[in-house]
Image (cartoon, rainbow, N blue to C red; front, side, top):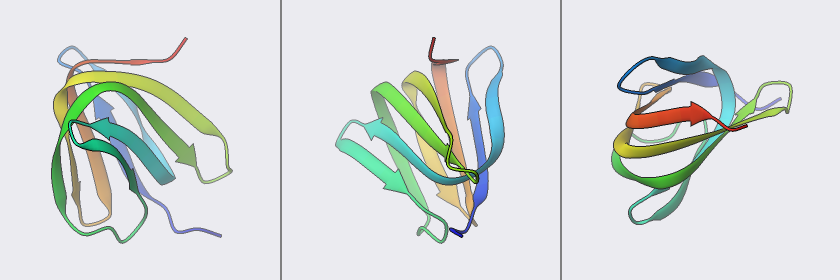
Length: 88
């Protein structure tokens, strides 16, 4: 089983989603980035686009985010965006 880590996705208005995940893929201004457990500390500027979180049971949660950043430290990922929401 893949190792998991904490994920929080927040918008300017609310907590959009939080939980444990085994992978997160997000669009940055330099292209897509994938994060797994044990990733080095990182700070990236988000591009407008999808954020896909893979849960411990293999299901995925799709969101969109714009105007923000993604940070990784100590097996925790935070996506902070002006606009973020669960995909319809």
